[in-house]
Amino acid sequence: MDYYIGDAIFNSTNPSKRKKLVFLSAFINLSLLAYFKYTFFFTEGINELFHLELEQENYLAVFLNSVFGTAMDTSNIFLPIGISFYTFQTISYSVDIYRGDIKPVDSIWDFALFVSFFPQLVAGPIVRASEFIPQIYNPYKVRETEFGHALFLIAGGLIKKILISDYISINFVDRIFESPWSYSGFENLMAAYGYAIQIYCDFSGYTDIAIGVAVLLGFKLPLNFNSPYKATDITDFWRRWHISLSSFLRDYLYIPLGGNRKGKIRTYINLIITMVLGGLWHGAHFRFIYWGILHGVGLAVHKLWREITKKRIPNTPLTQAIGGFVTFHFVCYAWIYFRAEDMQHAESMINQILTNIDLSIAWEVIVAYKQVFAVMVLGFFLHWMPQTWKDKMAIEFIAMPDFAKASFLFFIGFILFQSRSSEIQPFIYFQF
Image (cartoon, rainbow, N blue to C red; front, top):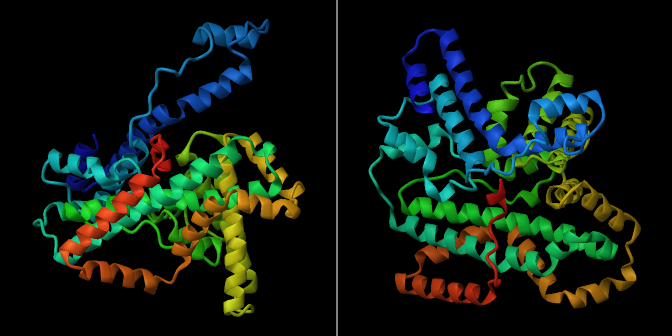
């Protein structure tokens, strides 16, 4: 449908018809996404609201039971792999043609390649049509430096995922989030910090692998992470975290809603709407909606704060450090809702942190989980190290002889094989 709609948009000179075709493309894509991803969310709400699973002696329940039979069953609906990502990609195809950024592809096979490009299909980055499709028609070419950089990215991504993320998850974070009331406030606080570095290493690790594999296939994918915990404010955080999603929401939702062009109040509302929908995109649960609300309100408050203070607060290393400290802890607070099994687990964890912090046992906890905390420190160190250091490491790896590269990769593979868990730990964003 998107392939033929794109052709129709390109060949039409009628502005009204072109807009209707873009709307049709978005409607078809979002309807499929809504059915597969959100039917359970809404039907469970209806079932619970009207007690459809029970034989109620009230007229409304009788009427709904006569319409739906009994409780609506969604157990036969299975979420197609990657639908959250390729839905946005195919929408971008229609919109980019409408905006004149690209021409339609030459054949439906080229369109299929764009939609099903496997390195980033199941967890991003979200690739826009205008970024990817022109590369289809370029001759295959991978320079020696690009090959070395691709191997560096793949190795780094595997280290992030297996050595850091999985180890923290299995040995500490998962057990705390599963039963936060069974642990002290300090342990819950450390689990929040642990999840912050876990999800970063997990998701950015996948992205690094995807970008590296794409380079080997002759394609360049967009940057998706830029040291997000270095952000000095929440707006800066969203310029660095899941860049392909945040920029997609900005360009295809926030700006079409009016952006900041329709007054201050409307700007704040648009920010909150955009982030709530971004939260809902992650999953059909109230905790994701609340996570989106938190970030939307955070963006709105930061924008208001900048309006009030303007240039009265100097941009010094001290103010940047304070801003970074506040931003990081706000993000960690929001991550609790993102990770928790439900709202009750999240609230229990926050309650433990606020009311059950006993620093007298902190050293005992650190000693008990010394290996986990050491890996957490390693993760944060690698994340916060200066960009110039990371660039130098990449340059030195690229300059190594092929035999040295192979030896290094074999050594890394051996270490990762020894540190892997007994069970496969899927990437966090596979579930979205």
